Each structure stands twice: as C-alpha cells, then as structure tokens.
Figure 1 (cartoon, rainbow, N blue to C red):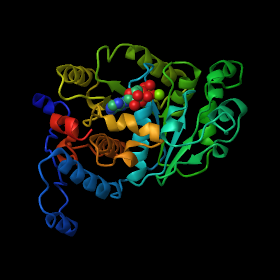
Figure 2: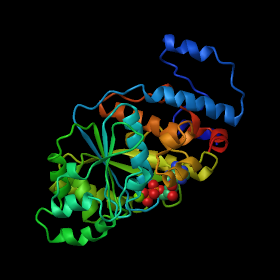
Figure 3: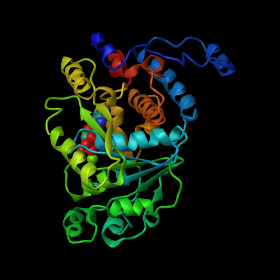
Figure 4: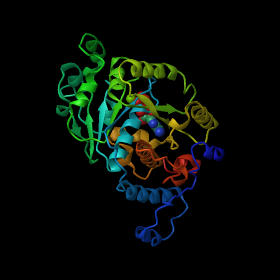
Length: 341
Ligand SMILES: Nc1ncnc2c1ncn2[C@@H]1O[C@H](COP(=O)(O)OP(=O)(O)O)[C@@H](O)[C@H]1O
Ligand SMILES: [Mg+2]
C-alpha cells in the first residue's frame, strides 16, 4: 500500500540512515560493502542500525511521566506496547518501571519476571498497602528497566478494593511513596474499566491508547474517553489522553490504511506518526520471556517501538517530532513487513 505512506509519515526509505547527524561515526558506515538488496541483507543492516541507535540516549523528562496504557478491548496490543515501549525507553537511556495491573500477568511474563502466586506483587501493594519498592524487580537483560509484577491474586482485587478506604487512589499513593528516581512509569491495564483501571487513571498523567488497525477499531473507545473525563473531573485534574498508537498495522491491506486515516481524523496530533507493524517477531518474543528489543533487535517491530519511544520522549519535552527525520521506514514498506518478520 504505497499510497499509505503519507498517513503514517513519509518514512518509506527501505534502509534509512540518520539523515541529520553527520559525524565521524559515519565513517565506519562507508567501509562495509553495500548490502545485498535482499530481505536478510536489509534485516542485518537494520539490526546494526538499531543497536547503534539504542545507546544514543534521549532527553529525559524533568519529572516522572506516568503513562497509563488502556483500552478496554482485549487483544489490541496494550501489553505488547507497554513492555516494548518500556524496553525502548530504557534502551534510549531512561529509567523505566512497568506496573503490571492485569491479573493475567502477561507483561510480567514478557519481561521475564517471576510471578507465581507467592511472589510479592502489585496485589500486595493495592490491597495490603505494601510499599511498591518491596515488589519491584529488575528486568533481566535490559538495564534501567524494572517491573512490579501481577500474580493471579490480582483477579480478586477488583472486588476486594471495593470495601477499602481510598479505593480509587491506592496505586497513586503507592507511586507517590516510591522513592527511586524514575523517568517513566508505564501501567499495563486489564481489558476492562473496573477499579484496577480506575486506579491507573488516578495515578497517571497521561493515557496511551493502542488501537489495533482492524474492524471496529474505534468501537467502545467512547466509553474509555468518558471514563478519562470522569476521572479528570473528580479525581485527577492532570489526566489527559496524550498518545494514540496504531498497532498491528499491515501496510498491504486497504483496511489498515482506512482505519489509520479514521483514527487520525478523529484524534489528530495525539496519534503518533510511527505505527507498529504486524510482526511475527513481536508475537514470538513473550514466549521467550523477552521483549522484541532483545529477541530480535533488527526486526521491523523492534525498530518501530524504538522510534515510537523516541517520538514519545521528544513530545514530552515539547519538541515536535519531524517524521521526515525518522530513523526507520520499515513499518510502512510492505516488502519489509514481509521480509523481516
Ligand atoms: N504488532 C504486532 N504484531 C503481531 N502480533 C502482535 C502485535 N502486537 C500484539 N500482537 C499479538 O496480539 C496479541 C494481543 O496482544 P496484547 O498486547 O496481549 O493485547 P492486550 O494486552 O491489549 O490484550 C498477542 O498475542 C500479541 O503477541
Ligand atoms: Mg494485556
């Protein structure tokens, strides 16, 4: 779908290099022989690019940004987005905490964090008032990334919270009492709008909504947006929808580009220029307890999440993102989607 290029930004260069920076570091780029124009050749080159870029570092926010990843639909990419964005932000040099607020514990699994029933978890924080610091674990393989895991106990928390004091603001209090310096906290919500999600909305300043480029993409979003308004009006005046991320984007289908266009018309600037392609690598990574950033750093999925993270980091400090300067172009080039999955 070449005609989609303008929808997600003019990022169609199949093997993009940094077009703005031209430092001595580029010298080495000139020495290797030109890569074959094959999917594997391009994937290898992209892997090198990705690894080089990960250490690049991004400006850090002045205060911890608490980002709630929510959409009451299941299977739209909330967990995938939470863990891969978090890993990307950490690889860009940030200190990042993922709070797993879904009883299924998929984010904990994907980050390789032990979360069997006896592990101290976010349930203990919410229901037993245990300090957050006592449940946070470092994520193996990614420096600067931490996780507060969810165990199966959390399934009962929706009900147990009802009778507790300050039931909507228990997560907020726990985060406020957490003393470790952090640049970002990403909260992975369950697919519902119950008390767990409300706790996340009260604790955060920003809502990130992943939208799957599929039929009925926008259905049910009104309800989430009304909840955000309600929480803003009554409990958390700073809350706002800061980011919409298009996920599982398949540039080969007309449907994906139609959904993308509809979402951009509806939400405008909140929609990231970077969209996340449908990628087998992204879906394989969790079964190895890894994010796609470590599982296959050169894949289109890894590069897209790195780029989305860059966009979010720059937006957060008021620098407008120029898609023509994007470091990648893989996600909107159908041959790449096919080639390096
Ligand atoms: N970009 C993607 N490409 C391919 N599969 C994806 C992608 N994003 C998510 N998935 C897969 O889709 C399923 C649902 O994603 P998940 O992040 O668990 O959604 P949610 O947390 O909203 O329920 C998972 O199996 C995941 O591996
Ligand atoms: Mg999930």
